[in-house]
Image (cartoon, rainbow, N blue to C red):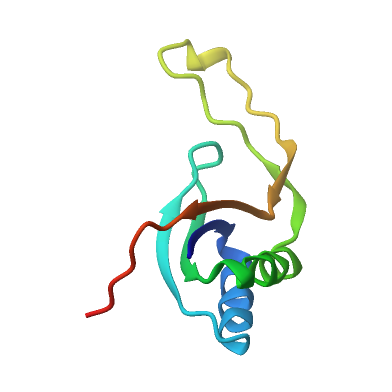
Length: 109
């Protein structure tokens, strides 16, 4: 058995959640915040049998696309903010960061 942790952008979370239900995967959704852009994310926790991991990864990949987004950089901490001009920069956001962990035991009460 494996525990799959997938961190996805909030824009992709509803689409992924629906796809997981359609393919009979049970998931727990956690509201999380990214450290780089300080934007909302959703972390999915999915326990599944070893032989279904690849199907789960395919579903995540198909429903979580990366995209380019313009963001204003965060002002420097401790520096002189008077001369700081926050020019927007284009960054790649979205997609999914996925961790697959072995599960030693599983109990459902």
